[in-house]
Length: 161
Image (cartoon, rainbow, N blue to C red):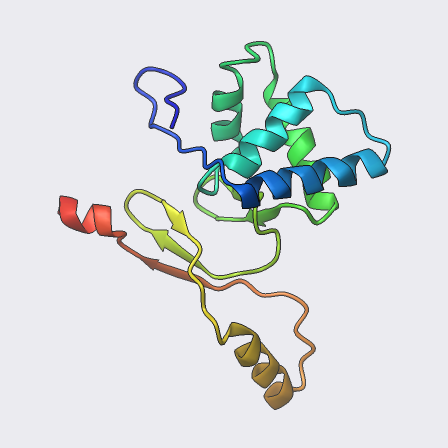
């Protein structure tokens, strides 16, 4: 766990074998495209993949400037944009707040979103694939993507009330 600046919320970085494998996979894909692996780009990838939540670009930048004080926000945006173009990051767009990014699961999946603290949790819905197939069958649509968000109060915010 790190605290990037006094007064800033604590950020959790989750270092586990799955996230390490995800980072290695991303590095291989970038190298296969002939892209340079600068220390800054590596740090952006590592921070995105090891982040336990769905950070904004600004949150990533705040964490990264601890080790790279001169890193620009544009550098972080460019790397995230590259990963989006490669299909390696999922962008969660919100009309009334900053977009969030998921560097661990870039495929469409459901989210639980706290309306108080804005924490985002990825629930496992085992029958989701079956539901999508049934929806396609019943409507004739060829479903190519989806977004399924649930809003409410997380357990921490419920306890605080």
